[in-house]
Length: 362
Image (cartoon, rainbow, N blue to C red; front, side):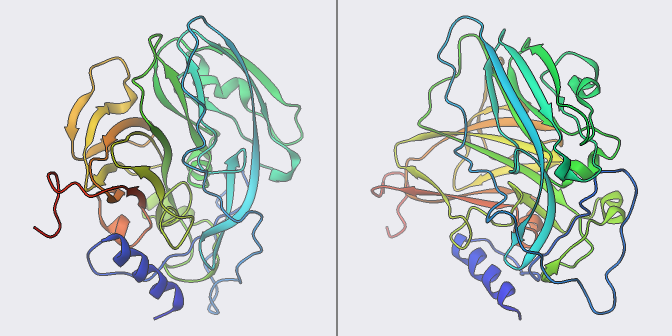
């Protein structure tokens, strides 16, 4: 058993995941942004060595969210989004060439109020090879959600569009060029939150997570640099299913768990970039006390939901309370994705025990 496999076993046991453990994972991606299938199988000697990384962590900080809307009249927001290609680790010793909006997975959350206007500048710098990119906002009335007007190549000048946020909700945005499945799988998706005119209920903490699949020529557990596997993508057979681009990223052995205190409430904005698989979103040791299904912020939320389906191309919002201390595990309840492929994050809830609610030693 390799050091990576031992590390994964330690992580899963520490957070309470059960089941037989598979070998640890590895991934790769073709850095080119065109639609040509350039996938080549690994040679008999295995993968090439892991590349030098451009960033220590590809995962966006889940707390990096704009503050809640506190204005009552429509505003105009000037937003600039740039594409960036980066080599980073999916897990230790496993490198992959990501394509991103603003250098992280998912891309930045955009937060506005219903009736606000967004002036978007979209730029594809030359360092992203020959890749053509654009942005399709599910919150936008217009051809392709803005994708047609924002389609540019690296040698083009930045493009600009303006749109008014007509309908409230929380929505996906993603790259939508012809090879969009490849681009999304490589990291090109994010969320835009359009708050209702009356705003959202106050919570103590908000988190922003994005799930997607990564398809590679390497096996799970095989260290080195992995190229993108187009045939695996067409079979919808991913090597990894991850949150924020990184396997088991928000656990003790990686970037660390998210933090909360007993007595607090939290809202999770959860984007399923896909490009293919439905997520079964579940908080182990908790429930979604208020669930805004499919990002619908106008209907009354569902109450005390254990697991909710989140289709690819959807952002949902779920709230939870923390009456007792201990880890709350956020998972895709297709549990082989947790045990083997990386779909796990932890919220470390600190505070005094509450034996009236839960007593580990009655």
